[in-house]
Image 1 (cartoon, rainbow, N blue to C red):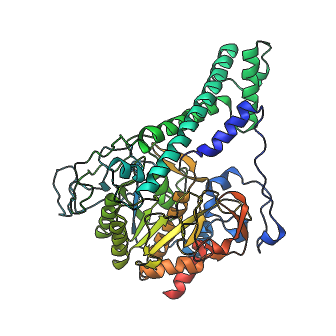
Image 2 (cartoon, rainbow, N blue to C red; image 1 turned 90 degrees about the vertical axis):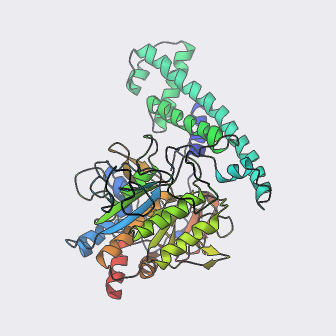
Image 3 (cartoon, rainbow, N blue to C red; image 1 turned 180 degrees about the vertical axis):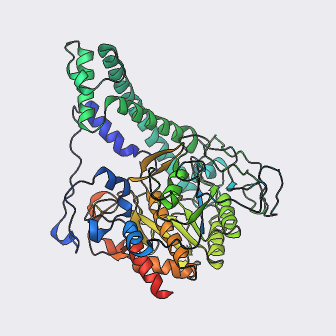
Length: 533
């Protein structure tokens, strides 16, 4: 998930134009919100921040998945059976130092000979498949509907209205961030010139004696930004990144005249296959989502490098499907089928959208995975919506009648047990979300041997996919349907009342936000799985 632009807009506006950052809104925890576990009153250490999703609520008072406890007390030296996990996402850095030894290789295919050696319809698919080819930027799905003038679609008027609202909103953000960026850049250039170096410190800034108005204004801006946890140099970089995202939204995602598709297939013909190529890597460093997701599942454990994955005996099958914009239903449907046909036992899908012209194709593929004993784990989405009411695709049901018994949809948790436990961005739904897992500020792999914190239900789903892989590795006789049921039944049930959608006035019992009313727990899941076996 990218930078929270809405939050940053508020923050930087406050810093620059109100003279101070101002404290974030404090959401108190009423007595009735406190469940059986105590609230953690100390800040997480740096090590805990990087590993909080693996901690245990009972032992650590952090709502993690008890992964470390599972390894310490249950798995220990047991390696289990190798499990292939397909990651349907953006490109993945398969050469990353923490992933290179856990990447799936298609042993039936001869590398780079230009032939489809295994006759699966994909030439040189050594580590998976890239359904996007060289494409990166894309429109949102409803913008494609408008571009194609698909007036017969019953949601066309809704798309027109949404596009007008979104374009106005993002145009306004562009104006605001251009103003903020100019102020921050001017302050940085002023201080750099006054101090005589690029890497000045706040101490250097506060030694400035010049009374020139522009200099004093730059000093104030630097101090205000530092008070909110950033250096001025970091703020320059962060605002530049946000400006790039805003411009991408306007120039590509919301641009009716833009076309990002670079493959020569017919996007409305599911039988037109074999397009794309075997290069599953990211096309630019900023295409980090898939690499981050893969690391959450399977970054090599305890190797002295940056992160530990949930599962210790898996191979990641890389399927590049998600562009910088909305994915195509055709690509998703074919990727799911590719994963099933080429041996994946777990599939992770950290993507989603609110418009889906060929949703039946994807739903059929999800059923295909279920019929072939494959667990499909899917992110619930980041719109703060009740997706029992607001549509979110893909899904596994028609009018709440499910077509798959192996599909798991996952909402996101924060590190803070109590009323602020549910991530403000997370979708929810007592019918359409199955369980919650750690998703805010999760540390994992990013391209070119780097690591970073990212947040979203995109980060919660692979945690659960990792648990599914652990179960399938340790207890391979269990069916995919049994694995799903184990994950849901073994989660920790909580009666806590929580703030939903980041709105302090919207408080609901945690049990009402998902079908299970629970948070995923690897320790309990392995215990329950062992009893079924």
